[in-house]
Image 1 (cartoon, rainbow, N blue to C red):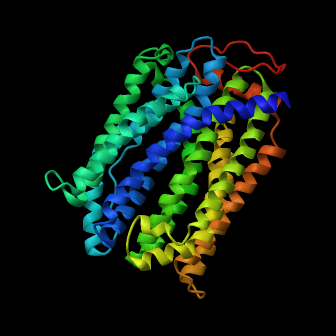
Image 2: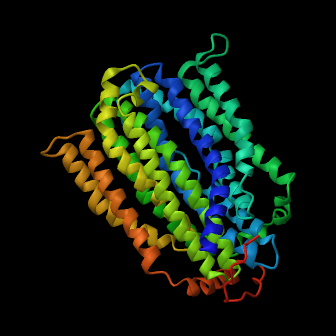
Image 3: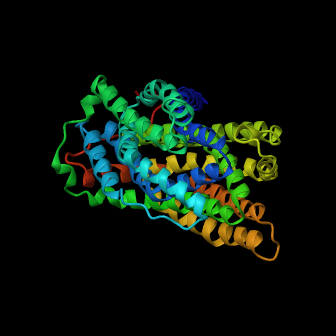
Length: 460
């Protein structure tokens, strides 16, 4: 019980600044949608389609690669004799996400929406690299137990983004209309990158950097062994959301606009459990690096319990306000009506999708990204997607509601399968040795000696 209380307290205190940081970062898309939503249904649909393409071609693979840093950096900080091993692995992550950035391909859509979408994408690309670099550096400081770094950066940048979005879209003096929304995001992304670099340079985090070195390219395949499954796990689940967005576009601009409103809500509610999962990944990784398998196990179990409390609370709040949520984005009654019809499915999706994000943090700390990918594929692509598209486009003709039924099934099955593995199939003592073996192979220096015996002392 003493350890449970310690872990619950640590996770609560560490997750709050992370959740604020994640929420502010996600609010950038939310604010962009608000800015363009008042321009018209076509503009809102085009922005939603643009975000789908950005997520699918840039954010999904690059953030998936960056998430592998939670495997290496968390354990390296406590296990390695040389703390600059954290910076060494971070540089590998920066190289990986930089190489991943590639030109995006357009997809077909109605002429007006496609033209607006192309404008959005061309401008947004100017801010793609600083965004993915920010994701890597954010994990660099989190591995050292510095959870407030992103929060401080966001506290400065978020108000700037709000002002930029309003001025560049609506201002009679400098307003550019639709193109102002992605331009505001570009400026914001560069401010995020410069902000996190400045924080690292002025804090104790710089001690683990070790300076730029080309040695990070030596044996980089060891990073990719976990980074590729990490990206695949994210791709299996994230791409389903984007596929549902694409499917919604087939049913017209109203369905696509309603989809944008609901997905904005998912983006908001996902941040709290994702923050808990990220904090848990650090906690579990640090514990394994110190040879404390019991504490790693307890932290994992406690985080799952906290995640359900957060998820159910959010579900109740949104269900109560299901008839008014759409009006935040648009005055179109048809869009609002579709939003209210989707909200009952949304509450299940946001609860279990949040748990997927949380449990993914535990799996990343254990280096078991490939397991997540193997569970995600049948959950979504054997069950969720076929059922959803049959109900939406097949004989039942449920359209967007059918797509959401399939999405709900896939996410729920995936969440329960991952949690069953966490509770029933992990040998935590064995995972300590696996952690040290992994670091010995992938680092430039040998990890420190560890002790298998666990204790109840707090991890610094």
